[in-house]
Image (cartoon, rainbow, N blue to C red; front, side):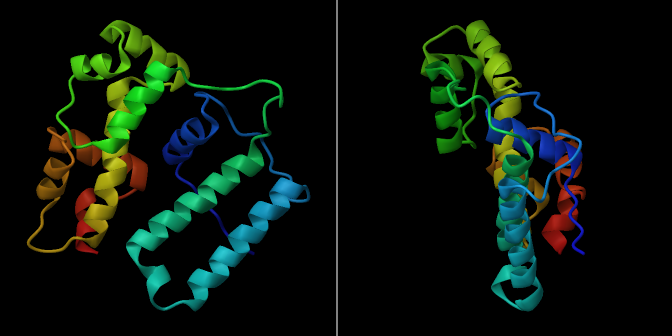
Length: 196
């Protein structure tokens, strides 16, 4: 028997990101007898076997983060059935432009005007588009991307690096808010990740 646990908030964020539709929910059960369920279970077992038998690379924090994300992505894709094949789910160009710019430079000192300029629309229209197609505001999306970058930095850094050094590197200005969101997403305070 293999136990598999995913933080609820992390799972919801990953679902919103992977499925490109905010607010989707998981079915009450995952059929492990179907093709998608069997494929995910096989991937989960092989990942477990690799980690259990490896004393080196796969026990590195960065590798664990990547493997956890891959297992979670597989779970979401196996659990949530595809939409009608004829129906395309997309994000408009204004949203895609801003998302790409955020991923290109998440540490940048972003302003709402910067994002609106990239999108070629007003700040209000950009906010509406993000809420409709991403499920969060542009700054909530940016904040999440920054946390995802800060997490592996914390995992591989050691003295004399501090938590404050890492969060400032990624553009955070409120350490307390970062710490609360980090704990909600990863289940531990950032200082715990840094000192492991």
